[in-house]
Amino acid sequence: MQSKFFHIDSNDKQVSVLLQLAIFFNLFYSYYFFRTPFDFYVGYIFYIVLIPRYYLKYGIPKNLLLIFSLLLFIGVYFTITGDNELGFFLKVLLGAFFAYLLMYYIVIKEVYNSKKLFKVYLKFAFFTALFGIIQVVVYNLGIDTGKGPFWFFGTLSLFPGGLFGFRVNVFFGEPTYYAMSMSGALFVAIHDLIYANKAFYFKRFAASVVILGVYLSFSGTIVGSFAFIFILLALNYGVIRYLLIASPIALMLFIQLITTSNDLESRYDGTLSLFLDAPTKSFNVYKYHGSSVILYDHLFVAVQNFINHPLFGTGIGSHEIAYDKYSLIKNHIIYQYRPNVKDASSMFNRLLSETGLFGIGLFIFLIVSAFIKKRSTKDDKLWIISAACLVVIMINMARQGHYFLNGFPFYVWMYYSVFKERKNLLIEGKNNKPVFFEQNEQTMKSIESTNKSK
Image (cartoon, rainbow, N blue to C red; front, side, top):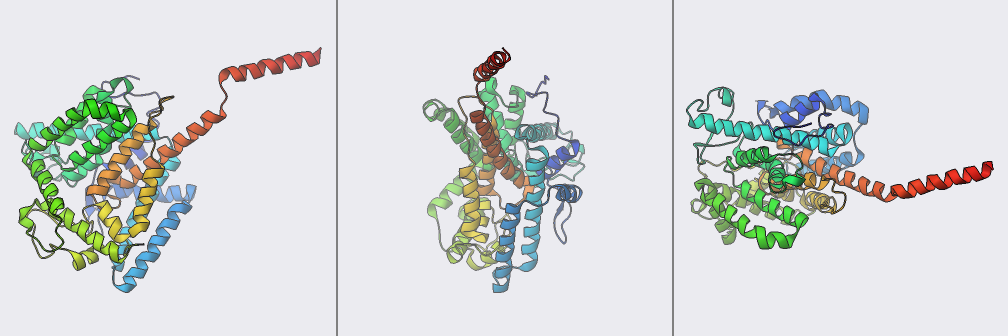
């Protein structure tokens, strides 16, 4: 099948409409119906619809149940000691459990074909990026400045900044969340633009749309995304080639990306300066970029809490209490920036603080043990999905602390699923004999049967 925008195979449309909607509203649409007594996002509707049905069909995976049972025990223990708060702990634990359970059912049980499922994600990523570009055009033409149909009549947020009057966030709560969730598609778009003859999904126009759409978020996470993408392409296509040829180009693009936006430049300079200064006592928060101050402070809190509780942290949802104990800036007001006390501004910070070596170790084990590279023979392109998911995981580790916001478990399960598929392909490849051996065996059997009949 041909398309102007995508490389589509005949089997690409086999994911059901219901599952595609579940993917879109959990990965790309982070608006909610209500926030009390908990945040009920639109995507949670599919928890209610799908989880009971899949539970009856598949049950609950033992490994997932074991991990969350241990997290439950740890959390309850630290609520008794006063290092955690029971209500928030249970809310976060149950939310994370059901999020990982739903994505387990979708990725591992219902579809279990990484290529088909990931192309659904890429399709929605393209249309999300295209919608963001259209928003920029209509905004600057004065057609819709944030209250019309392109912002769902004011229900979508509009963040000032950037080069064109606002920072794109489309259906996400913030431009940063948009850029992070799109970072997997960004990897594929850059890959398909550079290696068009080996493209996984995007044609040149679509790849350019995704890259431009993500850039228009003017999020500091774009810099991290490009860095991880550069490293992964170098690992898979040759380090020497990238060091000698692509490094100067990448450096020029990096400088251009930073210097074309005051937002990005101030974020980059502020983060670099603050982490080099590395204060350990109360400091002048107005000397640095507000976002960088908050990120650094949460890292400081997480490290202090980890030092005191290294094995298991103080339980899911406990970082807010640790913040009150160790924060360097809790008595300061950071203009225009929220401290993200519950989310710790980074998944790494939050895991370190709330789960200690146990949680950090689980993710390190997953990332290292399930990492796959491009194979020179019989390239099945599964490594592209693996690398794209790894970019999302690493960016979330660096800059987003919510355990399951914007469908984060989807990328974790996809990363694992691709590893299992590649492993099964290699096993099948070893067990399958070449065709000429099979033909020779059939010939020998026919000769033997002829001799016996004689």
